[in-house]
Image (cartoon, rainbow, N blue to C red; front, top):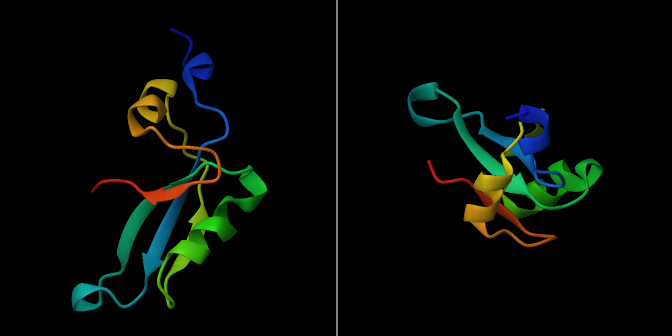
Length: 81
């Protein structure tokens, strides 16, 4: 199967950091945003606690993974760890 044809469009992965994690090790989470790419980082930033920072990644999800998430347009959520 062609990997490019299996990539879900319109769902963006955002990495979220808290610099002062446990034992000085940064805490990292992955979130998804079903918004236009240029709005993904800001949308997640609004959903996370103050002091955390969001960074848009170039990572992608498959159409199958997105279907299992049942995410709707405009929604942001943390991926299960």
